[in-house]
Structure formats: C-alpha cells, structure tokens
Length: 356
Image 1 (cartoon, rainbow, N blue to C red):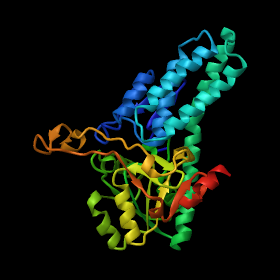
Image 2: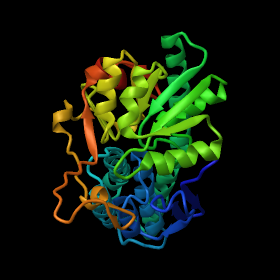
Image 3: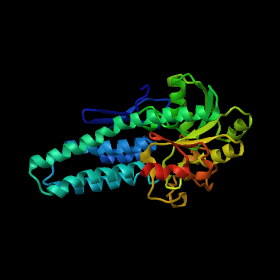
Image 4: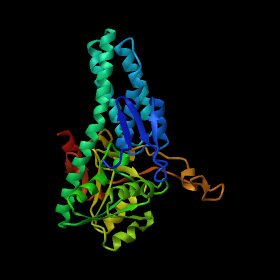
C-alpha cells in the first residue's frame, strides 16, 4: 500500500493524524480505548471501515496488559468498552457490527465456562485479540474485491475502455485498512489501464477531498482533478463524467444509503444527467436491521467546522449554522448499484443477496 493510515505491529497501534494532512504526516500512538474514542470522535481517523478497525484495535491494545478473574469479568469489561467506542460516531454502522460480532465471539466461551481458570481466561482473551487483528487483513482483501467488481461492472455497463469517475469525500487507504472502497474502484481501473481520469470534490466543510483524497491521488500519481462541490453539476453537464462512485457509512435493507453530506446532491445530479451512480461499501456497512433511510440517525457536528477554517473566522459572530455530517441517498437514485466484496447489486436485490 502506498499509504498506511493504521499501523499495528506486535500489539502496538498508531494512526495517521488526518487532521494534519496534507501539511504534516504524524502518527499518534493509541494506548487504550479512551485514545481510540478520542481520535474517532475528533476525526483524526475517519471512514466507516477505519473507525471500526481502530476502535477494536484500541481494545486489543488495552487488553494486552490486563488480567481478569473470570470470563464473565472479561465479557463485562469488553461490553462496556465497546459500547463506549460505538458512541463515538453514531451514523457509521461498521463499528456497531464489529462490537456485536466480538461480544458474540466472547459469549460463545462464556456459555461453556463463565468462571474458568486463570489460564483459560487468558486463552480466551488472546483469542479475542487474534479475532480483532484479523480485521486489518480482511478489510484490505475485501476492498480489493470491491475495486475489481466495481471496475468490471462499470466497464460492462458503459461499454467504454477508458473511464472517467467523479467521487466525493475520501474513500481510499486513509478511510480503510488499505486500497479503499470507491477509490478502490478507481485504483482497480488504473491497475487495468482503463482509468481515464478521476474528479474529486473538495467535500466541505471538513475538506476530506481537497486534503485527503488529493493526498492519495498525488501520492499514487493517479490522473485526477480537484473541483469545488458546487462544480459537480456543471462537470456532469459537460459530458466528462462516465459514472459517480461514493462510499457509505450505512446501507439499509431497502438500499437507502447514508454517506458524507453532499452525496444526495450528487445522486440527484447524476440521475438528471443519466449518469450511473454507484455506492461502494463492504458488507459490514450494510445494516439490514433498519428498513429505510428515514430511520438512520444523522450525526450533527460543531457549527464551527463550517464557520471557521484552521482557527480563522469565515463568518460574522452570531451566524446561525446547521452542520449535518451525513445525508441520505434514496435507493432509486443509486442507478449503477451497490458494489460490495460479494458483487454488484441493485439496491432492491441487496437484502436477498446478503441473506441468501
């Protein structure tokens, strides 16, 4: 991987501080779940897959030096810590699903021997740490599969041999364990020498596009151009865009999708211009327990993210500001499909395909 946003070696974890990019490249050590919560909440690490991985690895690091009198005590400790981590970013579902998986994994041992000897409890703890560590390797493999499935579908759908993509926010190595989701599709097209160009929005107010996606584009020497969010419609009207691909923080049963604010706007514009609109996300981002997007909790963030830029006031004092971090794209606007590591599905097919 050209970029490594998450470093985990022999039980030690550090993350690339994405608030400082692109001007500084600094890694922050994560020593416990409090540190994990803080870097997720502050958006020093972001992207639904990366949030889940960093949160769970922060638990693994904290567990390494601890002992527990029983399996029950281990389960209770992990439940409390995982719930704390889940509360850091409520819209992204990956960390909730990871927490549920890890608790179920632990409880399978608890049912057999809730007390256990000290040796048995330590063995269960080490098995849990190994289960968490697998998340890094699995995420990269899933992302490569997403990229390859998406590239194949776009090439078949458009009938073109060279593709120009428009994307939003950051969905690459900085948002995942490596390679990326929507940007992973771009990387797969480039790998096959079938990427003509990638346009990417600056993504106000946090500027994940102009800071982070630009960082990846320049680092990997991809043919790319940064545009203002408000230029997207005019770019589509010009005929330069073959498809729009974004990531997702939650995809629900009917195919409605929560993603970075501005995604809905792109989907409406793509629909108007008859350009296929795709969502690229791992299966862990799909939450089939929620029936439609109207039930997704949308995180609202500090208005100062909009009214200030790097500590400088952009707006007069007293300006009222609304700052939702995400919006909902209705399933009918996702005309290209939802790209997962298992294949590309129409939103209406998603639930059946994932539960088959």
